[in-house]
Image (cartoon, rainbow, N blue to C red):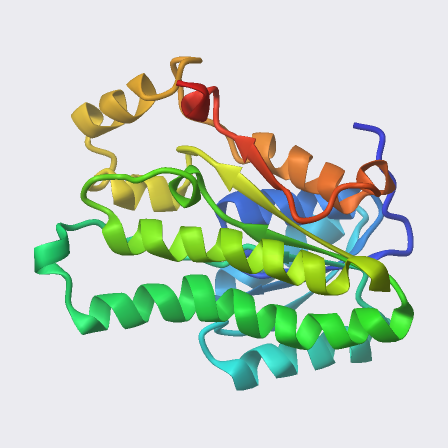
Length: 253
């Protein structure tokens, strides 16, 4: 995709691995100045080093999206460093499996604090910056689990349904004010999270996950990063309030 983000500033949460990391590399390759954020400093600094080694520009800011003070500081650091915020990819998330009857309040709080409150507080602090500029793009990471049920992952499914609703509501609130808000909804992607989701990469579990996708395989992180760059680009200027399924045909069944 020939998309340029020259002189654009892009903030990515959950950027220390997987989809976030690959998206950070892709945005930087397309000319963006990238704020790489996450809870793991060593991994985040490694992503920044990789971007710089390839001739790009990036800065790591440690933040936990479940903590509003961290998010406020993250956005403030972005503006202090690069002067603006053009694109925010709110990608940080956590998985959880288990039957409903086994769910604890601690499980609920952990998943919803990161997957839902993390998106809310990110948009809460990103949007005012974009309003001052008169333009901006926000992309939230949802999931196919935000569109359908999934036995054994009720809290995770509920959290991603919430992300879908938040995306639509925010898009409507700011549609006339120059801010587009969309979601990307991946199916099973080859990441550290999927490795945990399948019990440490259990081959039987992975075979089952592959079988759910009509294409017969799991997705790759770059296959999510490319649609994210599209949604962030001017090529998607008439798209807001949408959720782009990137799922190997899973939801078509």
